[in-house]
Length: 523
Ligand code: 16G
Ligand code: MG
Image (cartoon, rainbow, N blue to C red; front, side):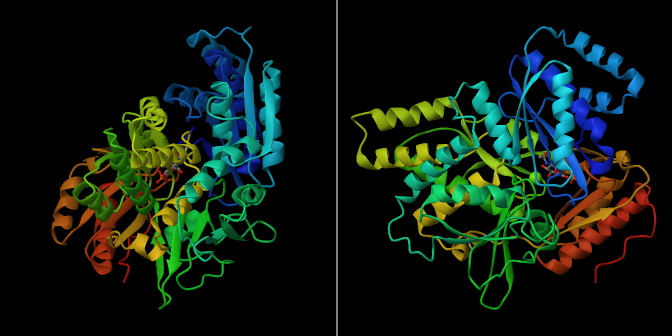
């Protein structure tokens, strides 16, 4: 199945899927009369895996109907492939004489070169024209597709153009950071031994001395995503191997295709502190809200989260920052779509995938303020900062490089240390567990996955368990990427969160047909 983020499995069985996704991208291009992207990557999965994601004309994830076609094509027997193609062509009324253009990119996995070759062959066998970008991050490919289809309005469709746009905006932002010491300009970066590390190296010359990056896990000897990278750090709640973490120093990790980022530091007692997607969303939305106030702009802004967002972050945003918070189902495309409904939508998953979307009308209002002879200096300064914020952001999809530049600029402008950022609110202790069941589809959820509709009795059981603890919350959902049911629990103490997660796991095991041994308590 074309899952939450495309096909992903062991690289050895992917040849035909890649070829067929080349075919499908070509059809999609003919249908939309626009350039389509195909990215070969399995993100944070182990090196042995690979995968493929399709990118729609505005740099978005492909639409659900076409995800369905992707699944059909991937599963067709060789002999039925032509029929499956004809079926899509008929359903979508595709004009086969229409030109097609496909951009292809790949990550650093050893299997990626030949798999992307299979995509290219798929494209050319339907007469499509391709451009092979070779090694790029996932968000870079999304960016290229958007630039191409907006005829350069969003930027130039080259990797060099991407660096220029982002870095120039970053440097303009950082000029507003008076008294920023060299110490504050330093960042330790874990590149997950992947494409992000390579691309940060490439970009460095565009940054001048404004950001000094010590790059670890740059792929020169370590294994991709192995005990490093954003997913490892977030799930294990510990620093990656291969990165020297000095007390108080700001560090960050990318994932294997550089569309996720998390920050962290260790305090003077050696305790590890993680700043995840929720903390990032809070920092960015606070910064933007302050600028909007200074600029005298009244626009509707929201932060979009999933059920995994720490309860403290939601409370802080709603009660202290007075920002609208929306909750959606897990998966970037869901957050992206809700964020689009607002003038400004800041979306982040707790795992570190996210970006900022700004409507054209907000961009126009900001430009008017900059151009108007009547705006006072404070308003103009705020408007310029907002404009450069927009330019440093990759609005097509969450982008670790772009998010990193924005976060670094905000911290410098606010004169904020990573500890001060962390102290904005305190995360509630939480625990995530997985439960194996015979068929995870027996779990049906509602209310952005926060409540279970089936199996019968499960939600009542969860409600009763949650009541036993203070500041507690728990939910379960079938994973979209693994054959398991995921359990999330948070509460006022780690002991309570762990106990609640275990008790809810037991309820899932008993009511949803658990297989194997019963879940054991964590302590
Ligand atoms: C995919 C999604 C990510 C989501 C995760 C959930 C994209 C690009 N990635 O990695 O957003 O958080 O799946 O996995 O959409 P799960 O369903 O196994 O919990
Ligand atoms: Mg990724």
